Length: 210
Image (cartoon, rainbow, N blue to C red; front, side, top):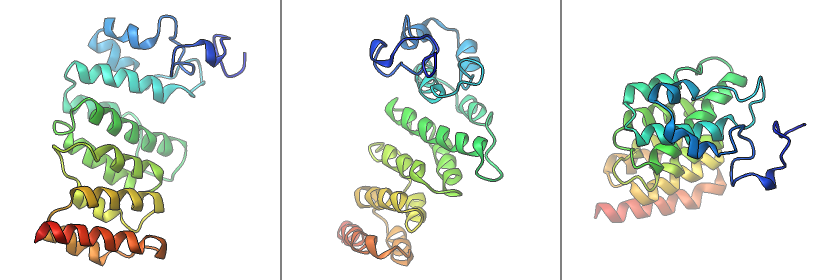
């Protein structure tokens, strides 16, 4: 049956559900009837044996339902702590990093950024250890979250991986407003491709300070 465990080609399944086993009815409809304990148990659980392709999308749906039910901060931390964060960038480390990016996006979309601000900040710090596009996506996800400000973390991402640097500069251009952030950004070394962007962001922050 190859890529599709139930033998249905992706174009015959509900939108965004072709990599999730629970498709008929869709998982989005099922989770509303699950208990809190069932949702906590199902989060992060492999789909069919070792077939993990759709796990992230499945967890996204489950987490959105958990947030709708007022998930506690300690419970979100427990879910994230199921996957290790230390060691080399092997399979588990990559999975944990991608999970942090997914969680950031879902929390912001649910309008719960302020409640889970400490967790989101921890996830940025974790992703910064091995910067790649996931770190950039976290900063991009947080841009519309006006109830939290992670400029102090964003400025430390400038000069790391290029996409992350671009998203960090974009975040700072939209949100940074303090002398300390301005001075910190001035000290960050960026590749020549981003030098003009850095100068533009510095000018924008300077205008806010006037």
